Image 1 (cartoon, rainbow, N blue to C red):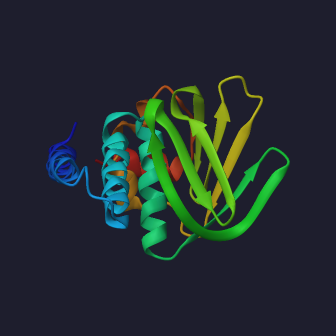
Image 2 (spheres, one colour; image 1 turned 60 degrees about the vertical axis):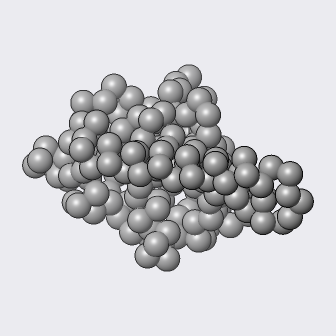
Length: 175
């Protein structure tokens, strides 16, 4: 794990401890604010799982989605017989056991990281189940940038990356 990741994880742990201590103090308080504290605790756990429980390819996708959301980018989803036109990125969650949930518009899609093969293209990613019976395509309005791909030089060596576009591979190797 990189130093930058360790510092982020340490900060998340500090935040988690403060929220948990506060939740203990207010355990008998009946207020709508208690629910907000519990949501914050879950959000911190969600961010910790990004560093602790998912693969490098899944993390790259999540960080790119967060980056796109901050820039008001949109994504289009295709899965099975359903497709969603470009819409804004809602929630992005990493749940226990590496289950990743993305909500865009009214559609929520999820996949389990450990059972997925990743196919990376400059402006989209395809996620295929290990049995090849299902797939999810995520198309981005903002293509992957060199800056974000360079953060993950291990990407090209990950066993669950089935394909990586030559431009993205080149950026990954430049570090």
